[in-house]
Image (cartoon, chains in turn blue, purple):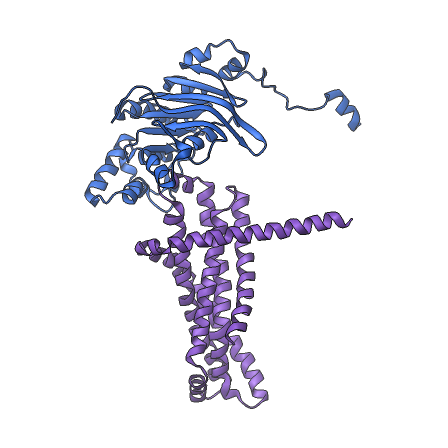
Length: 269
Length: 257
């Protein structure tokens, strides 16, 4: 695997709107090769949209999204599929195919893209299952798995084609502390042992600071802080501090915009 | 007063036309994918099982009852003209040309069409389709096409089973219950039914198969990824399929008569 220095994914001057709502207003980001980079931000700040732009599921209004030096928006459909074969993505709920058992879910990309003999497919699937600690669950159906197990199976499926980039969309949501610890450790271990580049999108500050090398904080369509997690946590901007320390009031107000309270109460009477 | 009504009318016509356009584009895409999908026939066979074999019981039961009613009503009507021996030909023509294809298609839309739409809708809502796309696999090619073709293949087979069981039901009532002569029943039927009649029914059931499967996969694949969206997709599948079947039935009958 190439370990050239620099960024595997580069975003420059990104503008994107959904309908009338502006989601990105000039975002610049780098995702260095071989590192775990986190993108954090409050709900609705466009984290998942950013992943859709990187994976070519959506196109930027303006600006550049590059994967390994190539503009994602300029790729043809077959080139886009070629690029996605170099990526693995873990969806929020695992997104396992409910018709197939665990084994077949992991074998799915191999069966679709290769003509490997069954013995080799079995070997690869069991290796990946061993890596996530679920070799014994190979014949369970997705409905029989807990949330944490489903995410680990999805992770095994994401790495079965040996991708260069692993993308995690909110990987910690709804996990119990043990599963959360397992997923955290897996993100770090897979990144280091497989030599991949990882992008983690999350709003779980404590988990991110434990696993990420770099983090970017998104708010109101812009990056408001970037750097090592501890640097970002100690930044002295009010909006950054409010998010990183979970303060209920600050630049993001506790109250949704409303008319004057006393006046409204009087009106009702 | 008239302006808002006119505006609404223009909007609904515009909406209907754009939906028709979207349907046509999707149908074109499915048609273009068909040769390649047929190469992976095992996936299609799995869907023939899901859409066809799993609908068999409901089709057979309905066929039996429709045939029995046909036997009763047919006998009552024909007896007035003293020609109850013609029951066999009347029941066979009615079943093969009209009731078989139409009833099967309506039942298919309710049983297999809704199952297809809700399955695809749930796959959309739970990110399974997005995950397939992220694994560099085209979901239309891998997921939609086998289901579409499975539906098309199942429909004529189910319609044939429906007509066959229906004929048995008509015979059961007409011959066993009402006392029509067994030999007359079958020989009149064989004399009256021509090859073209059978083909007319077969053609109808293929056309209905295409319509029902297209509606189900389109509505499911394009459903809003929420629980409400999946519910709406299933309802739309039944409504649009049923109306299309009846409309197409009239058009095909008018052309082929």
